[in-house]
Length: 143
Image (cartoon, rainbow, N blue to C red):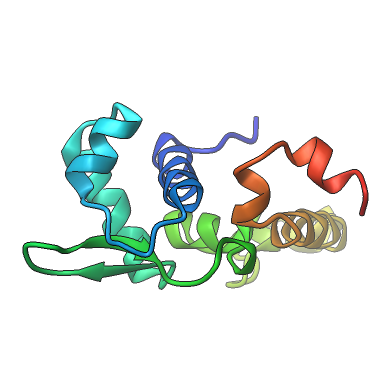
């Protein structure tokens, strides 16, 4: 089963929360924790990953907090996944590091997995944070 991890789910939720607020003012981890109903240590961990992935900007100090690094329509779902989980790959064969599988020669599935991975990556790149703030089915029907 392909499954989004809880941390990735929380991270996309936090990013969506920031995008919906549309504020240029930094939002604290404590405020995001209260808004989302998530434990503060978990929120802090996820915000650190998103900041390291250059999707959020962290401002220190009394008026500090987190803001989006770019406009919501300029941040893709693929970027969020990669910041939280690392490179997107449905199998080891489809990853950027290549296949270290001893069955690669006999298996013959690598080209298929690579194609599937490209389709998934393309789909995730085509969905923006802005899309995540509304109804994707409605927003993307016109494309």
